[in-house]
Amino acid sequence: MTGRSLADQQAALVEALTAGRPVPEGFDSFRFEAARLALLRKRAGEVARQWPMLAAGFGDRWKREFSGWAVTRPTQGSLRDGWDLARDLTRRGALPPAAAAELAEREAAWHYDGASSPRSRRFPAVRIAAGAVAVQVAGRVWLPRRP
Amino acid sequence: MAETTYGVGIGWRPEIAGFVEELPGLRFAEVVAESVHAHGELPPGLQVLLDRGVTVIPHGVRLSLGGAELVDADRVEHFAAVASRLGAPLVSEHIAFVRAGGIEAGHLLPLPRTREAVDAVVSNVRRVQSSLPVPIALEPIAALFDWPDDELTEAQFLTEILDRSGARLLLDVANVYANARNRGTDPLDLLDELPLERVAYVHVAGGAEHQGLYHDTHTDAVPQPVLDLVAELCARRRPPALMLERDGDYPPATVLAAELDAIAKASGFPAVT
Image 1 (tube, helix red, strand yellow):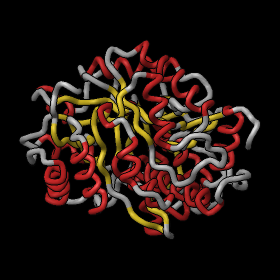
Image 2: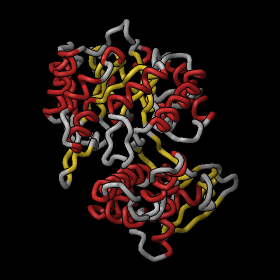
Image 3: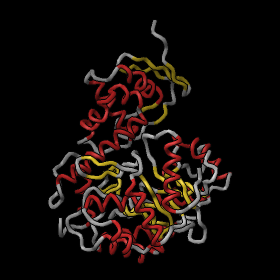
Image 4: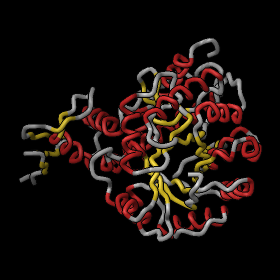
């Protein structure tokens, strides 16, 4: 990476590390991959704190599941990362049942367009995620018991 | 912090707030600056410490002082506001970058040890200093990889940044240990070369080895060689304060207390538990 500006070198390094790209020229590939893995594990831990039921739904497989999904996706913050993953899993019919209520509650409480920070909803909402129903009125969210 | 001796402290985290609050001899703690609201109410456990007269240092993790781009003005403003909010005598951040080209790395990344990188850090640190009510201490990070084009040794790189910025040093002995172990160098060499009179305080943390590399995890026990390094450091020049950093997989209170006691023993400071 000699001869390029620091800004260009740093941008190339971050992109390689977070978007699943090859190890940049001149770097030790074993160590670079170790850093990539450590980064994914750290992110998995942070997302698990924001989305405890999503992580719990995968049990011991959580870090691997998250890392496989996140390896080509730079972080948007742990709230959005978990949300994006939960929506992806829902589309694939693979959201763990234990995580459905957590996602439905958040979908009912917040408006999230998938591209910018979630905002609280100003109006009442009902949202369904993988069979779980959540109702939000005036900021309060609950899961009505199914008949 | 040169004039005051604080002894052994701990990184305050919400998950261990109850434990930290119960430490009878605690005189200082550190909190992640980005986790504190600049103006609203403080987390209850943290307010209790301040009410008790415990010094709380804001520790920034997302300023990206080593980024080639200028440090973000809103982040600097928040950092300074938190320092005032806590009445802190000092703040700290890292010699690292965390984003580039609009992408967040999600972690502290190492800088190439070049003059261009020194210039970038010094320029950002000066910008932050001009907004801060108190001095800043800079922490060298643990790096799993190095850049290929280093022009300076680690000691030269760090000393030049400190000299030119006038910043204090936040020395993380676990990072010194991790880097030396992963590079196959002697951690004592770095201690001998660094300006230890500039150390404001010291981090101590645990880690673990995976596939032959030592990871500075903050979620494992503090290994004996890191405690030995604390003793070596204190034999050269004892810093005014040392603290335990733990960031997850929190052990029972008795285990955390034993780690604080081990740091006290290695440094010769009184136990705070």
